[in-house]
Length: 191
Image (cartoon, rainbow, N blue to C red; front, side, top):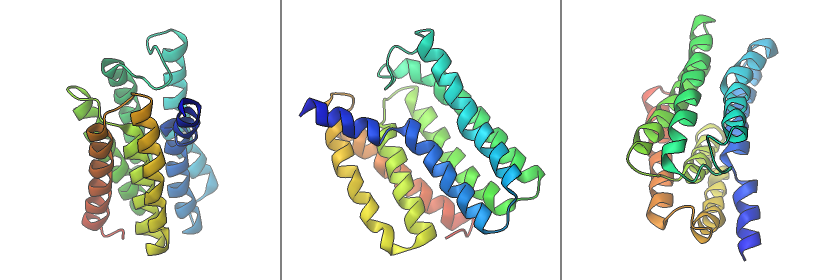
């Protein structure tokens, strides 16, 4: 069962899903007429550069494992990612892409909430990213995507089984992400 939990944890890893979530936002933007060059710059700033920073910390052993199990080791990764992502929001604003800037701002606010909580508690980013992905799909594509929330069940089982999180840390991450996404999209009139 440990191997299965490890596979589930890797398949639904935030390192995979954050670029996927950003990719969905980029795809949405592309379908609404945004230039692909702008979108490539956005992916570079929001996904590639933060991932390279994480890899640097991982290779230099400043982060001792892929899951960043030690809460204090998450702080530089999350902080750098939030700065890079704010750059992506800025690029969207400066180039006049208000709707994509608003979507990215909702993601940034969610990320800042996780970053802030990390100073005193280890909330599950696996839960947060998967819940944010499900919520984004429901908000942008409709109720036909509600089934994506079911992915939280095997992901939660895997994270708790591997002792990376308690059940309350997993539930906390899922509730925080779902609520923040719903509220953010409603406030900006995106959904």
